[in-house]
Length: 152
Image 1 (cartoon, rainbow, N blue to C red):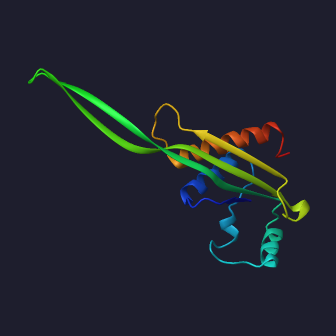
Image 2: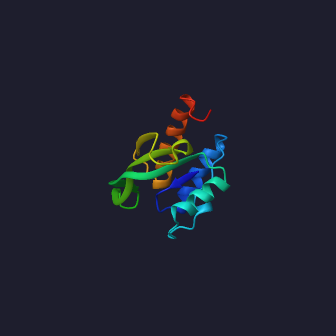
Image 3: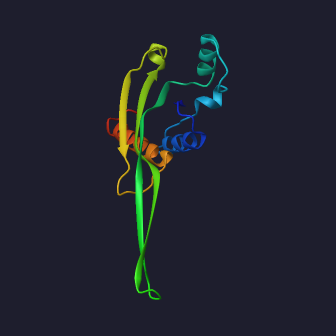
């Protein structure tokens, strides 16, 4: 089960999709539990047992930063035989950091058995989105987990 602790429904759907693309039987926390509703420990345990949940991966936003991007365009005007220059600025997502806490049923989801911290930086001056950068981190973490045979 994936508990995506970032307030971004579109990102959550895409993150779950990345896990499924790797043939991992993933389900969202929000499929079993209504967001904002308080559940007792026994209600949570009952839902987890009923759905045969063996592992919970909690994904939290650890770091996000923005940068100002300056774009300058120069156009030549044949009418005036001169260059006209236009500049625009905008804020773009520069860096996204995520923490993956992995809990297992073996110890009753009591404490994380592993914590993975991943970061990615927006490169080439492209105005990346938070979802796009988040997916880069998720793909890198999934690749590392597969390499270490975490899903076997």
